[in-house]
Image (cartoon, rainbow, N blue to C red; front, side, top):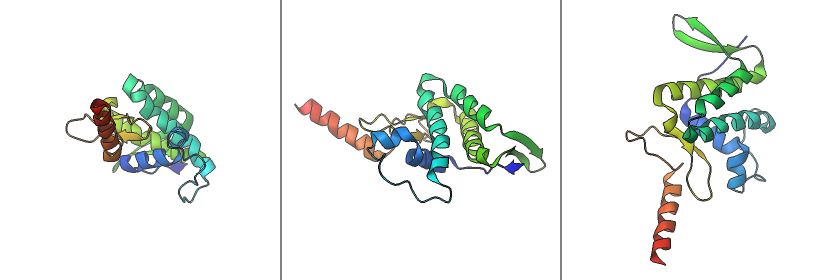
Length: 158
């Protein structure tokens, strides 16, 4: 059995945005090298793509459906201990997908799927997890929000 590490949602968002195919294509970064990692990038991309699908399905109310697909494929097993719940998997190749799935599961249960999504920027589909008090985030970063506002201003000025 292999222990599944606990991941921070901020790191999950960063990982998905750097390794999933769709954000890289939309940002025209598909030919750029992947960030330096201890694991070959070819092993990371399928896990990032599966996690991306959870974020992308959230606005349509299908995040739990996509999350269940990811968890079914990784097959994590819950293990109850005095210290709390931890997850294990049978195969080492399932550790990363299970860790991503466990983090997304915790987020969805505690915050809801309306707090996950993909950027509404014109040339961006990076994912975000909204931890703001208002829960109205629609852009991956202030940079994309500002670009959107400037474009809207210029459109009105014409």
